[in-house]
Amino acid sequence: MALGSVVSLWIWGALVASLLALGYSLAPAFRVAPAAEPALRAPRIWNAVLVLGWAGAAWWLAPAGKTWPLAIAVVAGGAIAGLIALGPLREESRLRAPGGFAAVVAAFAIAALATGGDAAARQWAALGLPLGMALPALTAGVFRREAEAFAGALAAGQATALAGALIWADRIYPAHQVGTGAVLGFAGAVALLMALAAFALSAQPARAPVAAGALAALAAYLLVALALRQPHLAIPAAIGAGMAALLALGAGLAGPPEEEPPALVAVLLLVLAGGTLLLINRLYGMPGLGMCGIGLAALATADNRATRWLAALLPAAFGARALLHLFLDRTYLRVEGVDVTQTYAFAALILGFVVATALVRFRAELAADAWSGGAAAGLLAATPVLVGYLIHILPLAGFLAGLIAAGFALAALCDGLEEGAARLAPYLGLACAGAAAAAPFLTEVINAPRVQRAIVFAVVTGIASWYVVSTLRSQSRPAAA
Image (cartoon, rainbow, N blue to C red; front, side, top):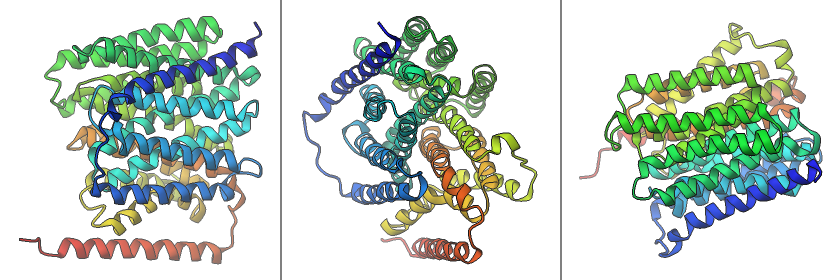
């Protein structure tokens, strides 16, 4: 059988496997239709506004002929992640992890089949999916819907890793869509193994991620290395899956599953993860980072608070690093390099830390009411493009680097590990995917007229000022008796 036919079968197999896992996970959730919650109206409305806003921006950001793949992918990603974050999969259960990841894999498989042999359209669709999937988690986090934010963060982080792996594997292995087939085939296998592990070990949920990670590592070797003869993609995938199994196993031995780890343990876990990221980056490049992030998705089945926050953060961080490199490649900064000691880049680096800190530290103050919450979510969603447009693409690279670095540091030091990961993970994907999608536009308007940029700055300043004033007023009101 020709290699191209094998790859097509793999993409279809990934779609079938993910749909089977999704069907298994969703079936019990729809037995009783939950009543609509009034508290969900504001995040749902603002989520729709932000998704449609980003989809509309595709006509300015994407080049001619590639606007539809980006716009449709943003809308589809927002709808799927809305189902996960605000629908039946938001409830804490063993079904949430395999069901959410299966929905993510199915979306990427459908996008790959819809774009066919058009590699450029497929890459724009792969950028749009993490963009759309990050927005429901962002709005849920702003409105302090912690359970919904965490469910959406899992999907957004996994979508970011998938996007990074698929885009770079496609760019490096363009013949016969081998990269796409390897990425989606492995991701579909991980989704199915997560569902099977959750089902088979329902009486012992702590062992589910160990089994899923170990079997996923084996699947990476059998499917990617042997069937498609791509060991450079199989090895980092196996490392990610094996690392998920080891982290879950270590967490099960560390203490009670309902307790979060001490701060020192959390920092050590992130140092281990950061070292793995550095090693994979050095040995296997950007596709390896994405494949390792996909393998780490198996950690989402852990019924353990010591590692569950890592399941949201690590795939997002690995994928965001790959998408940051895509932004550098599209803006030619990869050749010139980024000097973070340059004044604007250094200031933007600090801004990345400030935004990450605001997401974690001021979660109670972000949304005083429905309007201020929408303004906060909108400003956060637009910040990456605004930095590149109002200042320069060089500071935007510094902002993204600061955001990823702060995500690692703050996620281990905030009061609630899961809440911190739920807020930081989707924003990593949103910022890096948004910057990569906006790269062609930002390079075209790099010398935009000063008056035009001054008008945009005035509008943004007005919205931000109104948000600050309304928030301060709401906090100064006496509490109701």
